[in-house]
Each structure stands twice: as structure tokens, then as C-alpha cells.
Image (cartoon, rainbow, N blue to C red; front, side, top):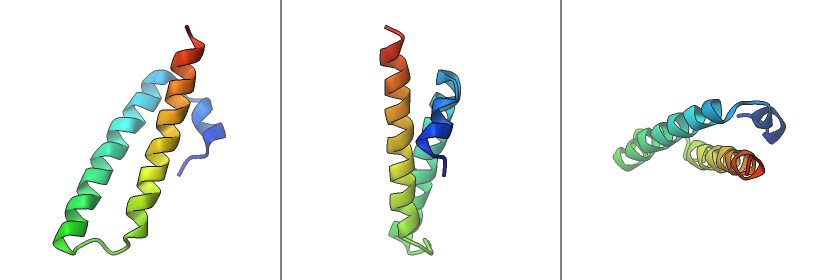
Amino acid sequence: MAAAKELRSLSVEELGRLVSENREAIFRQRIKHHTGALESTADLSKKRRELARILTVLTEKETSKE
């Protein structure tokens, strides 16, 4: 998990790639959760928080360019 300070050093393209990777990971974890194969349900909420953190930094970068 990356801290917001680390995320701010990344470019907009890299943040976009992280967003898509995290969305895919959340989707896979949701499928595992519904089938009963997910070992730790806390991982799902950790990934959601990480995605929110990335989206926040991405929005900050996009609005600061305007």
C-alpha cells in the first residue's frame, strides 16, 4: 500500500494505471468473497481505501493543472 506522499510523486499516467490495476484487483477479490475463497475480508476494504487514496491524488493533480 502506497502512502499519499508516495503517490504524489507519480505521474498522471502511472496513477491511471494504478487505478485500473486496483479496480481489477477489487473485482477479483469480490468474486472470491462471493465464492467463499477469500481468506481475509479485510483485504477488500484495504484495497478500496487504497483506490480512494489514488483517485484523490489523481484528482488533485488533474485540478492543479487547470
